[in-house]
Image (tube, rainbow, N blue to C red; front, side):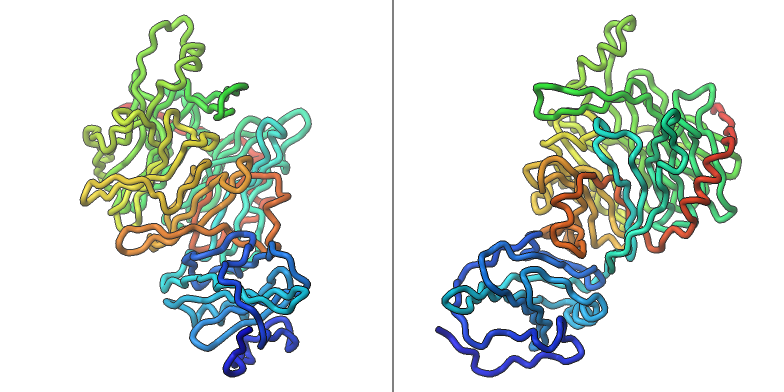
Length: 497
């Protein structure tokens, strides 16, 4: 049995859960880590994150949790934690650049037991104050029950940006997707509505309008967007997309493009023009470099053998679609692009690359990679990869990957945090994870987006996808968005080069 040499001093202003929460003075040490859910262990967190509430999954009659950093502490009793946000913030502010030791005590029939401390490292760099994401049930269960929401990262406050059911009816369904922002600000943003009342809602500093990006010369309206960082342009892929299901494969769902191109939308002129338009290439996922002088995108080369059975052939040859990453220089003043340059020959590695994203400092290219295809959200072999654009080094970011799906990802505005989706928890639903990315180019152990209830995700049967960072919230109400969607879309013009 061990005894503390002196009573630990608890800072009164930071004491949580009432004065009765005290650390046991007498206990036995186990030498093992406690079992908690979510498994927040040896993670690096921002000092402005919401409380990392967790629950103990060990046996015990009573529990005490102590967070300790350099002689200061927070103490709470109970099998799960629910830290006061104001006091949590003050504590993390003092822990900035230091390590917090999470001391767990459990009481059994023979008295108190102390477990080895869990360590949380608190980074000196903050995370963006808001994120947004789409919430969606499996499409094979219910198609229309989806929404776009935003979350204040330092609290548990979640608000609706738009609810798909506002204009959907039993007869006329709708699908919303692909919300995006210019330079992390919401005064320039967009999202799409498909089918009923379809169109793209475009928000600029001039107001809100609904546009139809489909023209007689293009195969579809805009799909995957990329706002130009300095000019009023948006690059879009345009896609004729279908979905297939496998009954015997590990990857049950396959999303494929029957056709795809990339266009540039000039907001001021309300015009679209082709960037890439090759019948032997399947171009998708445009993204700009931070200075706006380079456009990155993915493309797969495929030569159809029987045009009379074109669609059937594309579906049957799904494993042959392997996407490389390319880039083109861009002059925003003349709207001219240079020739395509191969950045990553994923096909030569028998792999397929998706969703390229450039870090805010322009140095790193973050992307997903799996065996085949362009939509890896159901591909269990999909992982996140990184290219150092200075050294050309390519590596699997093993620090953040798991044995299940890692897919859509985003950089924070300061380049120190990565937000991504993963199915590692249960294999069925994508949840949001955050990983610290240090100045040496190393990612750290990711942590699950915290919720007030530690077991929130265990019975939440919906997926998070298309997560994006924001430095400010969307202030337009869902009802106002619905009023704009309920109008006729403004047609755009096609400009031939």
